Each structure stands twice: as C-alpha cells, then as structure tokens.
Length: 83
Image (cartoon, rainbow, N blue to C red; front, side, top):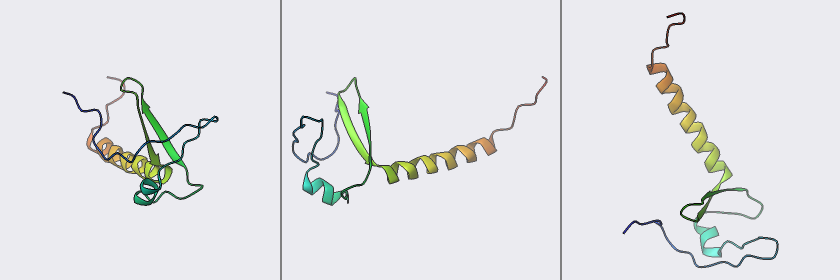
C-alpha cells in the first residue's frame, strides 16, 4: 500500500465562512509559528494534500538551491558557440 502521508497528525480544523482555518496550538508551538507570520501553501491536487511552510524557511530553501545550481553550472563546461 502506498503511503501518502509521513508525519504526525495534529488534529482537525474547521474551515470558516471566509476559508480561514486555525492552526492547532500544539502545531504552532512545535513549529514556532507566531501571529502575523506568513506561510507558503502548497498542494498536490492528485493526492489531495495541502501543506504549509514558513516563508522564511522557503526563502532559505530557494537560496540553498540556487547555490547548488551555481556550483553545478561551474562544473559543466560551457558550450562553444558557432559549432
């Protein structure tokens, strides 16, 4: 059987009239989520999974990915024009 979720369940949430949810207190504490912070929201429509990540953590992830890409580009010889 294929596993679609690997992690910890924090309970359920209700969706309000305006589409708002309340993130459970134990989850906010564990992930150090404070009022007013921004979270990135991702979804896999096929698996019907929604996930979130701190914007600051997402920015760090993109920065590290950019550094890895730059190092890889340095290792790949540039193609010669006019061939």
